[in-house]
Image 1 (cartoon, rainbow, N blue to C red):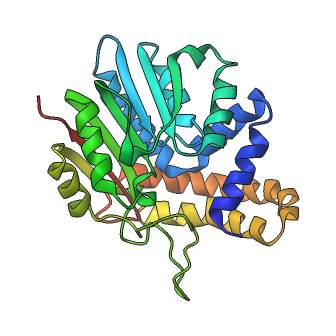
Image 2: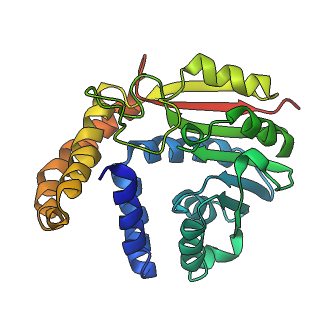
Image 3: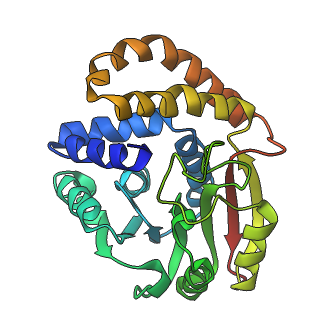
Length: 271
């Protein structure tokens, strides 16, 4: 048992009550370095926009970023879409019990055949494109629904080991990926081909972030894969591992990584 089945099982457990779901979102935002980068860039981009905002959360997953945007930007209306109906149902159930529920609409959507209509001011796609074979179709849809001058933020594994392929074979620790990842040049070129001009890109999960990933996520997931009894051990493990892992995340965030296992590309639709 690898990352995705365990992630799904944890998601189902924490969706039982709103309090558990908030705790789950807090844990995801705390230990996953990608959340640190995504939230920083979202604040920068949306913080510079005024008036009512329309946001497309393309591949919302558990819904934590849609909730984050709705909480921090009361002028934003978020359309959160995903192909996984159970994920959306859990997110919807939680949102309906929060003041932000009215700001977030959910819909089952295949991004390669996106039916949503724009214009959107901002499109967010976090760890989605590595799951989709026909990424060019997705980027064409993003260009179609984005308003002129609007931004799209893509966070994805890079081709520098972002999918954590095991050395002993072709099996990936994260099994659902259809590609190992993107290089910066490849992702920028595909966005430009769709009519979206890259304006900023950078690698994440450099040496510090990669070490934090192994310490905070991969190691514990592997323990749970062997036995769910590890749930009783992990709280004690994190007493020591969490401060070290968070310090490593902070170091990664503060430096410029010449390469890394994660990649962020921000592109704009020409006005």
